[in-house]
Image (tube, rainbow, N blue to C red; front, side, top):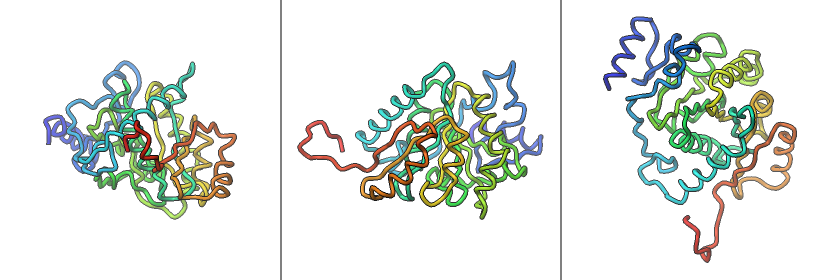
Length: 273
């Protein structure tokens, strides 16, 4: 545990706030906008030890593939360019048609790429309250998350986890619930999105959601974020399924489609993977 983490732990104990698996949480004062904003909230990331991640599917994994990493860096550049406007479209939903298409991996790797390169903090929110997996990929065991925040059982600052990977902060899903659509469509969820967008106007806030064909969660969330990024895995769905699912987002600021796990021709001399 670093000196900063020990100091955070002592401060949390003094204020009666929990610690999450040794990662620093944020106090209410850290999240208060105003004069202290340059060192507040998501900017308090100095001297945080990076999470030890060996998953080869993540950009931080031990067996990193340069070609795959380059594609995520390319995606990062495209997202930055496509969201530029007088008012940054900084809240972005990532979804897919069915499960196992790589939407969570895309959300994680895009967040990592943005956090390493982008000049501000990136917040990744796991809104898959049915089968959350962001914390599994990062090796976290959070005590609280978005579910507890939506139920009024915890504050956002108590659930945020600093990863030490660039300026990446994670808000895990928390407890699995049987009625996630009620929580995600509530006024509290809308307030959380608006608060995060307005408080961190120059930061990206990414939301990983359940697949769109089976559940309405992604459609509900798409109405309260700035844009949607859609992940399609080659061979995972048929044309009819894809058209039906994509149709849900025609009027919801669909930013683009990520074609995942794509095959390539070995004759292409510029192929990396």
